Amino acid sequence: MSDPRAALDAIGLLPDTEIDIADAALQLARVDAPDADWQAARAHLSDLARDAVALAAEVAEGDLPGRADALAHLLASQYRYHGDTDTYDDMENANLIRVAERRRGLPVALGVLWLHCARAAGWGAHGVDFPGHFLVALEGKGTKAVIDVFGGGGVLDARELRALLKRVEGEAAELRPGVLQPMSARAVLLRLQNNIKIRRLRAGDLRGALACTEDMLRIAPDQASLWREAALMNQRLDQVSAALRCFERFLVLVPQGEAAERARAVMDELRARLN
Image 1 (tube, rainbow, N blue to C red):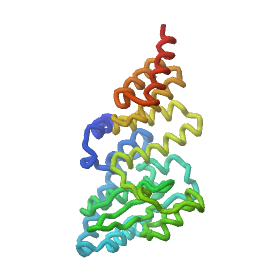
Image 2: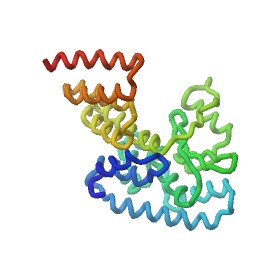
Image 3: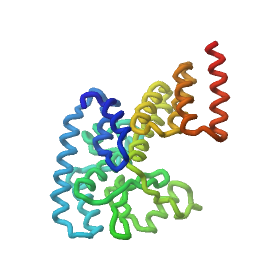
């Protein structure tokens, strides 16, 4: 589509299993970097997919370590993708077009490329919602290989996962149920954009953060927490009517509970300002 936001709206209507995660990330990147060469990035994604298909033909059926090695060779060795440890907080690290140009990025941005290649190869894979550090898991029969895409694509064993968790949460942290929770494609995309939203908020760019939140809602229109965030940002920007609309949508999704009651109280205050 010529309009990336129209593409995002269309993605928001799709079931998660039908989302092309790399193309969706490309549309988000087009919105955030309208002058960037998105067509070159799309051609690069096609090249990656073609090469992944060729690699898949060389890996034995069910060879999970072989799949992990093949993807690491393709992305880390052949195309030289790596984590950006020098300018980690640069927002370009979360923009797929810029990541493709620079061959470096945040864990979740690199993860999108790994998931894209795994899908092209016909291999099951998903994002892993690991605390503070996005990972990718390749799926096998009754097992999986958890990969640190930021660190070059190495497969992490239990000891290494435990050490990574301790670096994120402190020495008292231990592996626990749910720490390797699978992520949907939509959740991966939201995590990608959340990096941009947070960085804009830190820079005091509230309008930019709101625009990012609104684009996240295009692909995840039923994400209640995002409607509440958009409402509060609009409130801070003194955009009362917009804040009320966002709170109303939040209440459709979350009609009961403490958060709903707080939202209604804020809405009463906002309506009083309109009178």
